[in-house]
Length: 155
Image 1 (cartoon, helix red, strand yellow):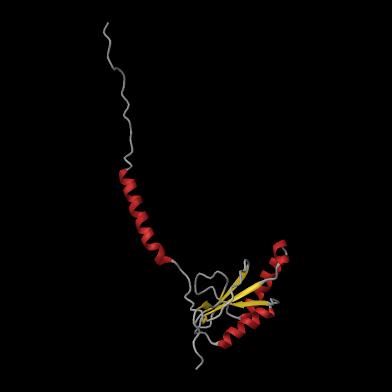
Image 2 (cartoon, one colour):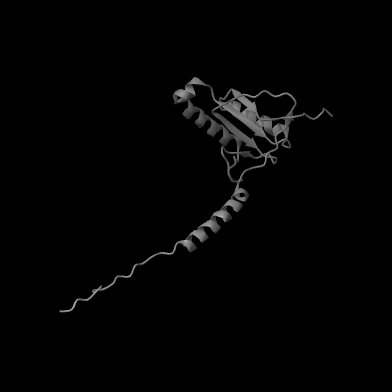
């Protein structure tokens, strides 16, 4: 009787070559790293400067942004469509925010604060309209965001 050496069926070992996959992933990573800063959306608001400013650390303040065109943006707006058509909508949102905030223990401890961020080119009248809307929502503490620097001399 003869013996067969290595008899039987040999099974093929399937291996996946991951080198092309790694190459493609690295190329995609570089593409996303280059394009990510370009995709950052936001609104360019140039706030006015003042020679003397007082910094106030407000942890839970609500920002109201007024663009150069006088549009009032919703909180955390990411597109031009995230704006208030009427100031009455702003008043309603702020009243809702104030009520939700006062229902928490942290909200009861500190009064609500709204910071108005207005572009330096926006009409003063519009800033006062927004300020009045915030005050009519029952929020007494309203601040204005400005940059420290040299104020323009009076003309």
